[in-house]
Length: 353
Image (cartoon, rainbow, N blue to C red; front, side):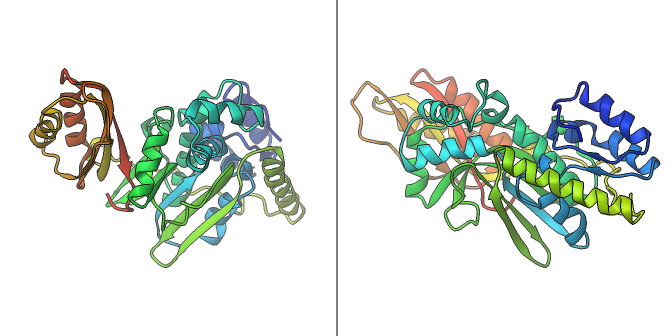
């Protein structure tokens, strides 16, 4: 059992054990995401098993389900809330209307966030997990460095309130979706419809939505804490003992040795909510709208809260579906306007690309 965490010296320890024909159980998501190809090859060569149920979803049996029960399904997408820390923070911001900073401090106080929470709030933790899920769902390897990643540090309570007005909530989602022969792979905060199964997941709970050609499934359960991960590891240990007893090791390997092509984020097509912090002066809306138009971005709605003339105010622009490169071109142009202080875009998740 490996529970050291990280790559070094965990990779060395696990490699040595597999080379000796030992069964290995690990909850180390970074190790599996970055070194999975080599480790699965070693397990196959030595006719042994590598278990990692605790690496994704804590107490949710998602790995076992994807490797066995759903192996025959043609999976189209997997979308998950796979980080309890960020989901707790966004839940507090939504339910209690508290700021990001206060919600983070509360998460630390309750033990839901690390003293240095960068891996969680900047999306690295979720990136490792969606790389693992994509590998299992689409039977191929993905380079974890090619997963597009955004954290939640720029989300405001005003963003969540505007999302609610439109019938959405804001969640940090890990998304893997088949687009033709390519894979869309990203971690980012999104506007999620209130009708979506994941919209009602609050606190440190995790949930993973799997859509195949034949069925839609939602896995939901505790995603943070030693009890959830420990339970997953004990389950792996029991499974390993059974395989050893009945000489069935290597029975369910990982059919994930081919490389998958990740779709460049610039090719993503979606609606966007763009928040612009600008001076409330005559003509400001016209200037910003003109830059959207020059970039080929069509607007669906605009919201400008009541503000003091001449002062900074957040203006929200909801776009129609548009390619990501067009949005980025518009953002760059708008950022250069003398009346604009800051700009930030949140994608609207509608299940299409």
